[in-house]
Image 1 (cartoon, rainbow, N blue to C red):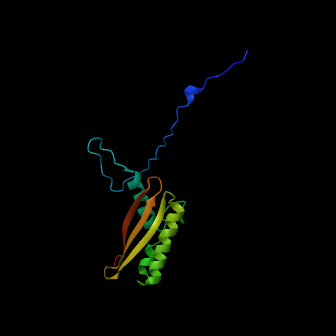
Image 2 (spheres, rainbow, N blue to C red):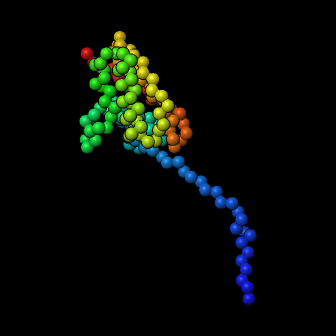
Image 3 (cartoon, rainbow, N blue to C red):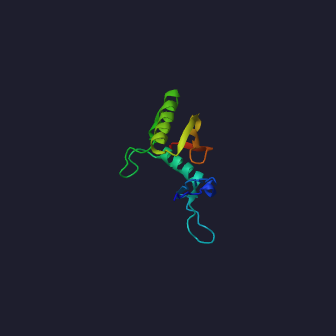
Length: 145
């Protein structure tokens, strides 16, 4: 006696649906939710933008147990406002983001000199890998006199 199996009912294609990972970060402005009175977190692309901005503004030895984390740009504010300083700013930003922020691909760093006001305007253009979204973060580095 031969046993046969009819598997014709199993020909329905199976679709695999992947869910994008959700990211959350603490909003440093500490805005409270109107109803729950809890701090509203930053979600997804806003959380990644906040992380990029925090990495850019972090100096060496500011984070406990991670002294090498940061772009260390504050020290460059006291250098001459020339092309060499611009290159050092760009390199510092690209290095810290490529090493500590694997969720993005940096497309460009634009640095504008505003030496009359003792500051640099920095725009970082990047793509968020998970969401496939192009985004930008603007930062103003200034020194106080």
